[in-house]
Image 1 (cartoon, rainbow, N blue to C red):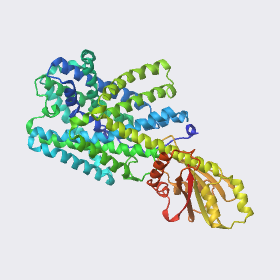
Image 2: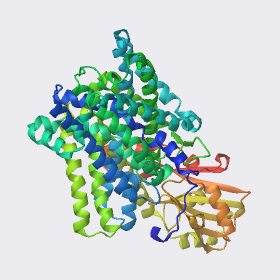
Image 3: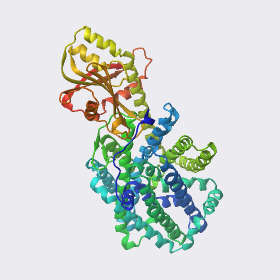
Image 4: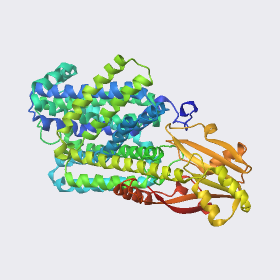
Length: 628
């Protein structure tokens, strides 16, 4: 059915392409743009590299070609052409494939676990980024060393504390700040290249391959550090819906990619020229007199990078809720101008606690590097798998063509994933545990919600039978309109039968309304609701929303009235069910430990009246126990 529904989305940011590209710099490229702060330093530590030109050039070649293959080819050139009505990211890709065939448990598992892994990455990114920026203070003067960790914790607390205010005003400055940042790292890179211009020999891919295949297991494990240069590529794909592909591509090719290449080349040239490899080689590119201002702009850039990750976590949470994989959470729109500007308090504070725990627990960006990368590399591997299916089913490519492209990406992604697996014991277990826990909660919630729906459907009586009983018993009809929200496709909603049984009366106008979230991002308003009349003054309707939309039942009622549904919009009472979940007496339902977790999640979810935008003074809640 969803294939036939015309789709429309809210107006995208408008304006000249250069201005949109400037805005994209701040929202999309913060993570990947701040990776030079810690990537080459981590690689040198893993390689144990002394300033041997062939080794340094080999390492640089691996970085440059990783940027090209993963970011430029896979994401900017291929993945961004596979969108779900303009939305990108692994959840949108999963939903797009789900439109074709609904029963695809393996694809759903890949998409959900990939999304869960991004939550793990979202906790690590702010910690490693802010720490790596502030650690430059230690190079300025050792007196700052004891204060770096407390300063990082204070900045992170402040970052999460301002999230309820929204990012509308400060977000306008993100693009120009990041443009200044990319200009600075490019100039720094050029100054380093001047020390050893022959560093561009690393553009030859054989330079990196020779290093990789002549240094045994140590050479392979270095890939775990090399991968840090592209940890923001998956977020780039997920943020595509904010601006569309053209501004992102222009920003990448015109600003971000050249700046990153120049800066990494400059760091390598400086090492070849004999610069000390202890400390952070990134800051050695800076003249000592400008070090403190550079640290300030670097810290600001990492805050912007962290903000992008947090905002992405909010957006992904909304998608998961709408698709039925997480309980209802309070979602607040922080700006009327941008649909993506939302705030999810539960996610914000949980992310803050985990990020602070990682910052304090690991203490240094060097230690956090071991925990970084494995989550994103696993997500990229899963994304490649889904892209292969999309090439076959959406683009109609042959098995040979799709397999060849996907196999190339799979080899690269697989190598980085295996190299990052070596870091599991050193801290890589942290994002894996976070992802596993998140995935488990998603799975339990979805299974429990399905069990509740099945239990309600099993006990529902046919609506014709119910209406005949109402007529036979001469149940009084009182003025006004009653809207009964239900999960069931047909039959009598339990909340309707409970209402009549307890109140011995029924409103003059009845609307039985089911709210459905479809696996597409947006729906045209003309397709929002489908209405049918079941009996005089009794209507059944289905309100449909995309997973990027927020249900608004009062607005749906106005649409229903315009379609001929006879209801009194000035006198509406909404009836909702409140289910208390209990275990089945026969022990054949959901395992008790899962039922306990599901119940706890349900108790802490936001109220359905808030989620559906119902006027609270007009809501009647009727409770019952549901055995699952």
